[in-house]
Figure 1: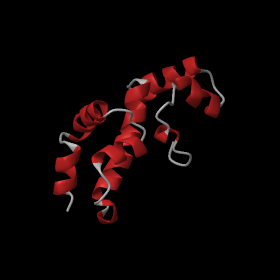
Figure 2: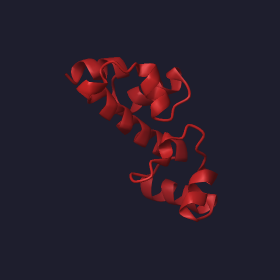
Figure 3: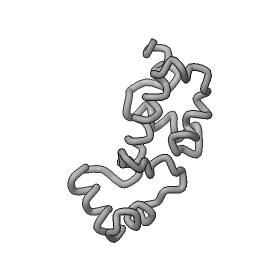
Figure 4: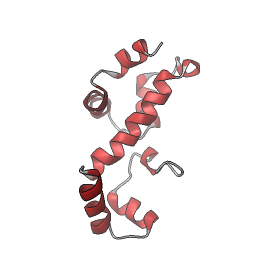
Length: 101
């Protein structure tokens, strides 16, 4: 996840990730559920939000819009990005950026 960053692909499915890891999707799902205590998309979105936070904190990226960031990190819609971001951070992407200065 950290080296290859498959989560940046907005069309990533559990089947895609399972193929990359050379295990069955069923086994991957069970591992994520059992050891991470979350569903596949929550697991993936956490990585996406962490990447978004890095970009939002980076002063050299201050001109990159929230919309550009959400596509860069693998989200397809502003509403799902905003909902996930707030779920994991307790704040909106815009407020997070403002308060990271």
